[in-house]
Length: 419
View (tube, helix red, strand yellow):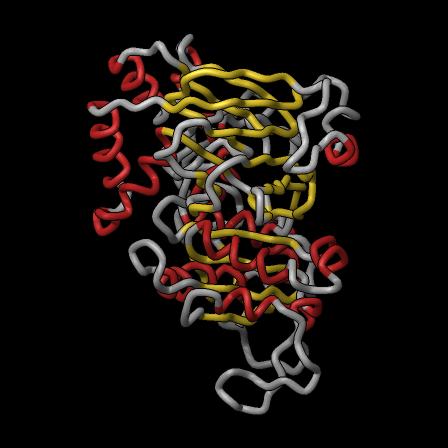
């Protein structure tokens, strides 16, 4: 059988001709609807020569814009994330599209927290699979890409495991990474699709992965007094961290828990004293480079360099972003780019009324909060937060880390991300 992927033409149907400009080349993506699956299967007459059938399949994939590939990906599925539809999404969407695009892949269905971390570690050449079949698992270095199905946490586990490898730099340069949002928040999946001017859905994410094109994505490095952490989304302290962490008590409510706790936090408005220092971003690309940032990044116990700026005061909200979306429904930093080498830090300081805080939070749904004068933004390549008041949390990518002084710097253009 020759398999053609019917959604490979970019929109899944032929109903958008009226959206084309006169030269029929420029389409406003915001006017298009969602893609729809359209799988076709053709039978061919019995023959010993499959050259013409192979040529047909090759040309269908070429017209669909799929890159010729003999690559193999590892698909990592978290079946427990979000509404627990990771396995279903793999079987019904991702597997079909990978197969029809001619992409070979293996799949790992995670069974416990940390399973993906273990799988990313270097493999003993004599190691066998977990089910004792005696068949050796491929080492991650043998793959060309990793596709994560789940929330942002599953990709965090993948990166955590890779960082234990002696060949980390080499492997990360080789691999392409993709994420299909099946979790609760799905901030990175939403940010990738937003950057590509795509609608948000698992089909759109998978479509970008099978296309095979990639671009660079920044990571970040954080330090506290006793620990260090890697990240790729956000750091928060004060209101956003309070909402994120305290609402865990009603996690069963899904994304609604954040909205409900936000209302509670506005009614019982808190502010925290803190000292915020940062190395400003620059129009000079050299200033935003990883080497420059690392050279101007102090040890955790040292004073900040003289070229850093410092703000002290009462903070209601402090939110450092590397991506546009903290979740599929929250566009907190619409000006962020996946590879701009910059933290975009949003701050609300006292005095600010409950009404203004509520207005800013409501604006997170469409980005209109950026026009509110009480929402300040500080683009920088490194920062330090010294909490003076206790009671809040250091929250990196949705996880609580060691409290107290924390500092972070951007690691520019580390990952190759399907986009």
